[in-house]
Amino acid sequence: MSTYEAGSALRKAGVVSGRDMTSEAAVAKLYYLFNVCDDADTIKQRMEEDIRGELTPEENE
Image 1 (cartoon, helix red, strand yellow):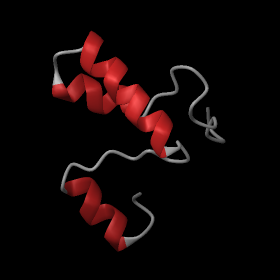
Image 2 (tube, helix red, strand yellow; image 1 turned 180 degrees about the vertical axis):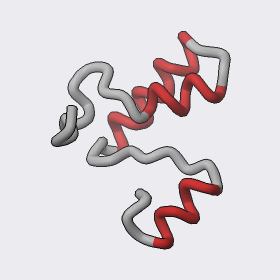
Image 3 (tube, helix red, strand yellow; image 1 turned 135 degrees about the vertical axis):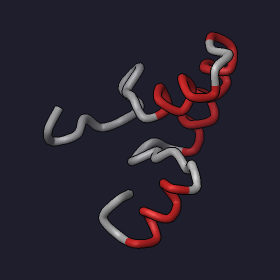
Image 4 (cartoon, helix red, strand yellow; image 1 turned 45 degrees about the horizontal axis):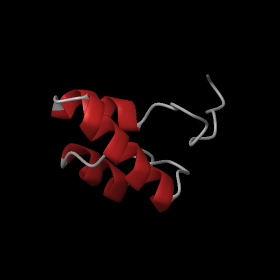
């Protein structure tokens, strides 16, 4: 999200990148994380991490 100015503004506003995750996977992942986490910062961090193959691995991983 930091490549373009609009993405940088979104990141500063607190938007979490879903990269190539489908909206259905994002909703399911949020339901799961809300159930196991009670800290918003942890949920934000985990949303950007691959848990069960919902995100394509990045080149540098």
